[in-house]
Image (cartoon, rainbow, N blue to C red; front, side, top):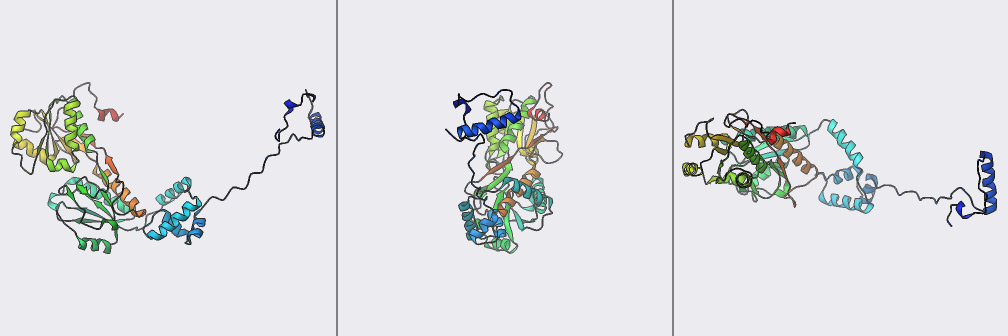
Length: 398
């Protein structure tokens, strides 16, 4: 029998009915004398809980200050790798776990406090100034604004295409205190393995044109965007959708454009039209392709490309043949996708600032890809949707 008195095991004891409080106390006293048991349970005393590990305890074990512990656990670049390892080891030995509520409060307090100067970031591209498109200017402007809001200065740099190892640029970046690099869209897809000693910088790319090394990326969701274009064209009655694209551009977007159009033409309900993916700057076979495939709608990568295609095929815009572009910027006669470069620039800097603050430099072991979906923008280059047809873009507005 345990510490509790089991009254059901004592049938010889009288049952108490309609007893007054006084009689109950008297009965309890008689029961205590008769049985030698107490009705009040004797609960075991719980030992005092061990104190929860905190920053001060970690500091004592690691032999550093509490401020150093706080910075080391946030992987701040001011703390050396050896000190950070010592602090992390001490925290693991103590079983330290950060309090999510405290972290939430500290984030709230930091967000309300004006950001002081943190360090400098740099944005790199190989696109010459005369070829710079509005997309890049909008992306860089948004990235600069976000960087300044987080307390970082932003330095844009333009490199020549095909640049090899550039120790002079590396020295200049270090002299300016640059800790993070944002790689912007490039003049052409290329590898940049030898350009810099990447171990010295936190890096985020805002393009698929950086073929190597593989850094964290924030880019448009090109496959989804192209599927949106195809869907919008089919709801307007277009059945033979043809893609005209430079092979270098298709490589830049990871073949997302051509893959989406082929999927639409094979499995998405449209008629099969072979995409016209050409090499270099020439489109010598464009007219033959147009006569052979007979597309009733053409998709181009951008507005300049769409105008060139229409001119070479002697087509009017707007006209019988519909035109849509994968990257539309501002008001335009062409319908197409607004790729939201401001969102891409802002998201890139948020990620880059986090890498800098946590001391995560060099080529990541597991690169991540953040894809931003674009928005369909109507234009006179395509017909109005057929009556009674609701597109996915219109449906999402509800």
